[in-house]
Image (cartoon, rainbow, N blue to C red):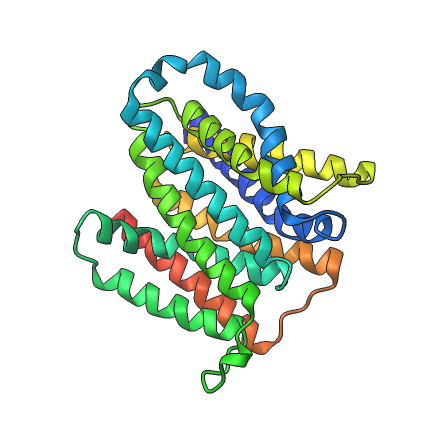
Length: 287
């Protein structure tokens, strides 16, 4: 195994570990500030780094097509995080993580729809398993709509939005530096959150919360994404997808440590079904 391959696997594990931490971290921060204030700070801290990258690669922005696609990408990132962050106000961190991870299943489904490709039977099986898993995770009684948790529904839409964002990212990085693609979409999301954050009033928070928000911006939003982009040059998508399965597992681990969250039997069954669906998609990607 080459040195770069080992480095890539380690970087992917670190990125997945960091993303797992973010779910209980966001839940904790929402006890002090609103979700738009959180997103404003998160994207703001990430944009401090990103703006220098944008300046460095500004020549790519002279192409109007590239510019509009990047703006669309930033909008999809903004929508994804709004759904996820608002959803976390009404659901638990571990449920949010497992439902968000459905983007692994939704990505090939949405890609087939957008590019008019045929969906194979393995993806269909994974989709069915993931939706059944969602019902178990969310404790939905199919006989009563009142059993539906609004937080879980918002997070479900978050996973679909993330799937679209991933597909668009894969298209754009073919013609532009991945650093620019990452930086510009984060900057667009920062601009979009600004008016909402300002309308939420004054912003005062304890130093530990501020530092945790900086961690979300710099490490979880910027560096972890770049670690993923670098690693995918040396690790195939199947191996990467299998590593990403650990994200909701890490999220549950930290939710248990910090919030004493314990999944009941139905939620455990749902979580297992989601993980199995992710693995099926990962293995199918290899073929």
